[in-house]
Image 1 (cartoon, rainbow, N blue to C red):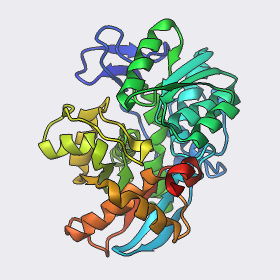
Image 2: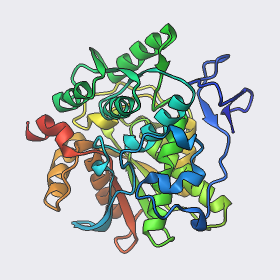
Image 3: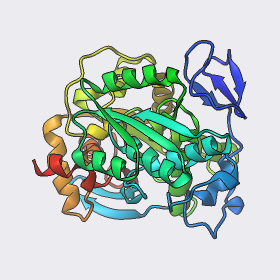
Image 4: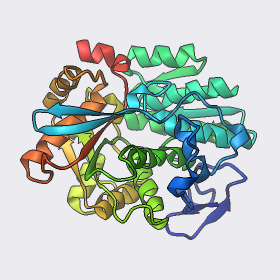
Length: 371
């Protein structure tokens, strides 16, 4: 296993933690993993570590808080029946715990003691959570308008929280500058061991479907780590002969900050320049993806697509899901709106098996929901 740039031109061993190519500054990915077959699942584990055979980190460095193995529940929506994958029930309240559990284990195994990242909220809370459990010092940079509930959560875990004014990209720029000062940049957007954790979502859905698959998975997307992880997980299962196809993967984004939607619709693999606008779905407020090419490729390879959701449809969808018993943050609601639009367009039939990934708990955004 090595780090490798997308073009394959630069390769580095993973025994020294990095978050980008030291020579070019380009993102690095991990060389393909072996995956697993169903007989290698650790049935005694009730967490994502049941797929430990496919997760390439030192087992002794794990900090286990019950991440993963979230419920998959049937719900009837106006456009048709779906299943909700309740990642909102993770230890810190969001799917980010899948990636952070694995990333922190990797960093801990290699002697990293201080970590930092930028986030719209959920990743910062997740890193603060797992850093606390692992005994690491943690600093997080978040937008000044981040939900007070999320900020309180980060601080109670013991993280140093810095509120940064401006856009989400301004927060990223501040973190990139800080990353040159010696603290390890444990970015969920840059460091690929985070995606090594999110790929377990694919394994879990596969197992919860009785080692079968749904037809479609709709994923709220900010920087795309859940989308990329799902694609990698299903590719690994195909490589091992456990599945002969993958579900169609659809990215759902607020139209105000739909960076991936714009790139996919334009048929390009590079970021499309646009002026982002504020969105209530702060958890997916990413105007420029780190891995645009990989995200577009994941959508194309699965036969899926990308849907931009208008701002005025998001909050009603939060209430719609809540009336079905799923109290989730606005970022999740974009998946429900995307499903409705895909059914209306004939891209998804109501009789198909469709999973909507519920990425975060509604308590994280209570001010926005009640405002």
